[in-house]
Length: 140
Length: 252
View 1 (cartoon, each protein chain N blue to C red):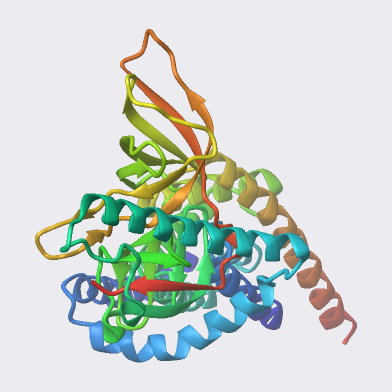
View 2 (spheres, chains in turn green, blue):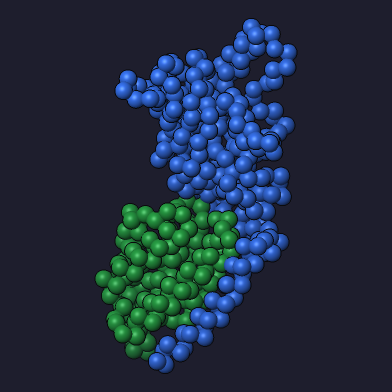
């Protein structure tokens, strides 16, 4: 699971830093937070936000701040409601992406919708890897 | 409640650290750190961009490059003829002095912005323009130690005065969703299809801005209505900006 996150995160940082305006880093981290609910995602959010700001000549910390606050709100929400579901992934990724783009440049519903589609794919992948990992643990 | 407690210390720690980094970065206290880290990230960006963005040397691309070169020569010849006719001994060369051009690799491409691997340490400042074979490509909007971001002229944030080469008609070039509009042209002035549009020259007191006679593009269609105050024309750039791998910063 860790290597999957790391691989996808590196690809997302490189792509977002060179060829696309889609906030792929945010989408990646969001999906892994929903699947794993691990504190490691906060570490990754801090570092990845820092790196992406460097790549895109933004004020350092702006992306990390957004990631941390948004992800903590997700954690607060999951105490009362189930977040490990497709509707939540779609809504949270859409809203998060739209807000992120609005803060940094211009909010785009089309880009937010694209990110929701990518989020579904990453979430599905993450869930499968998690279930396979749990099966292996049960057998051993 | 247990899970909430587990996350809160981590969140708070990183939030406070990030907030301090943000504040220090906003006031410029982290420029040294940014400069050092960019020396590590720029080669990575350059490599990734090179892998993702392949330059296609087809016959069409070669013909386009030849077209750009010939248009530049046409402008030089037209200006020389005008200079001779007017007998102005203080008229300067219209093209940028090659000694003032700083080559820069493109390491990032977005909707209406690009990133290059030259920054403050290379003498680049906000407001400098970028050219490719005398064709205007964009304007620097953000710089750091080793990287700069520039707006493409086809983006929505740039506008500048321009003139047509044949008819010397004045107007304003505005970027519009990936294209160019030559706008605010008086109805009595003449606009011709296939006429070349060049910059008129918008240099401020600091010597920064759009130098004159840089190629903007060619007129592809004219929109003239007798009921309107102005006419406009659609202009197409001679440079395919999305396929650029190297541009030149005009050091002013």
